[in-house]
Length: 156
Image (cartoon, rainbow, N blue to C red; front, side, top):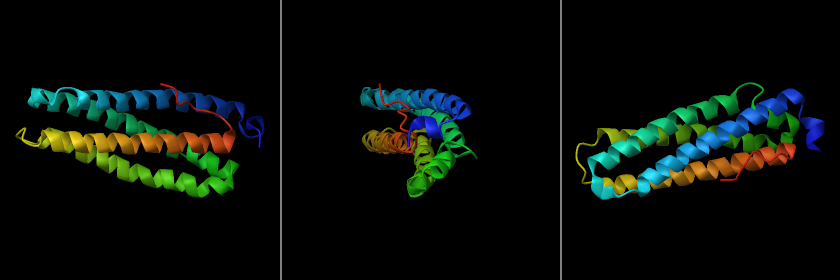
C-alpha cells in the first residue's frame, strides 16, 4: 500500500510532530548515555548529572507515550491501516509500562543512594536501560515504515 493511500494531510502533520519528538527523545537518550560514559570517579557529582539526564529522559518518555498511544495516534492508526501490524503495535504499547518503570527505578537508584560504592552497578543498569530504549525506538520506526512506507528518522 502506497503511503499516499494511507497518510492524510492531517496525519502527515502528526507524523512531522512524531518525527520531531523522536529526535528529542533520541537526544535525551544520548544525553543519558554520554553522562553515563563520563568519569565515574567524580562520584556524587557524576550521580547527580546522570540523575538530571534521567529526569529529562523520563519527561520525554512520558511525552512519547502520550503521542504514540493517544486515540488516532501512531499505534492506533497503524493498527487501522495495517491490521497485520496490530500485534506489533500492542507489543510496543506493552513495552511502555516496563520502560517507564525501568526509567523510574534507574532514576530512583541514582537519587536515593547515599554512598558511591555502587557506582559501577548504577552505570551498568543505566547502560542496560539505554539499550532497551534504543531497541524500542528501532521497533517503533520499523512499525511506522511497515504501516506507511514513511521513514520517521533514524539519522543521528
